[in-house]
Length: 165
Image (cartoon, rainbow, N blue to C red; front, side, top):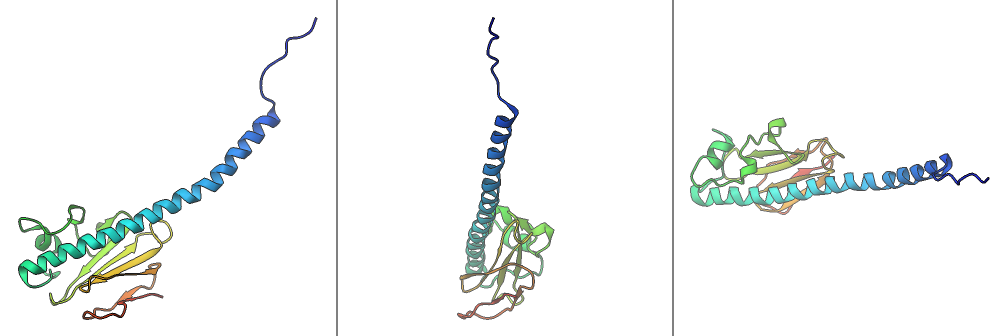
């Protein structure tokens, strides 16, 4: 009598399938991570645009930009209606408390006549690869990385205020 043919996969067939899946994962995972970094950078640019609008609305009502005296949350979110976007109702000093979507945000205005907004990636290469800067000119500038980035307060001009290493 003939034995019934056994159905199933051999070890070699299973190993080939696992190798193909591993190869596809090795190709796909870096693209997914890069997509997250790009999304964080896009969100940072959008956030800076919203913050520029908020600061300009504050200036149109009060005739000067908010100053760090007091606090960002008191000046920008204290009045009714609030000027700032709700996701930025926190300290804007570049510390861990100022993180929004992988970026550290800093706002500074010493005199109320000018201001600087800076967005630095919390972990360069992971949450973002570019740093962003804006001032009262309304132009958003960028450079690659965050280590060694310095910001010089200037009046409105066409030269970048963000110095990259």
